[in-house]
Image (cartoon, rainbow, N blue to C red; front, side, top):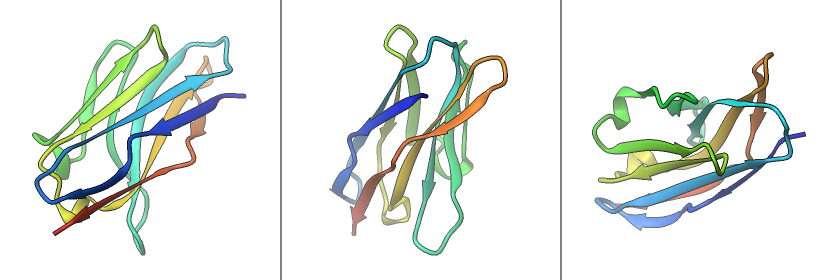
Length: 117
């Protein structure tokens, strides 16, 4: 079973920055795509950004140019650098990884990001 440990959430003022981390462990299989999703109150969970093992990335339009996703394959860790944060970015952010030949799907427990105006 894959364990995902997230860190880096918190409270920040508008215009500020935060960096989220998610470390995966507990699997002998290849960790394929790693990504971040978010869910604001009353809204559906949405993709923020994801990155493949070969470093290909894609982003939600709402975060392009402000957020940067990266990963360290040796550490099985994915990062999300969030700059120019706005109150609209307030949400619980969830780490997601796809593992093995069947692309099994695993979620982190979520970390709260709150941006004050």
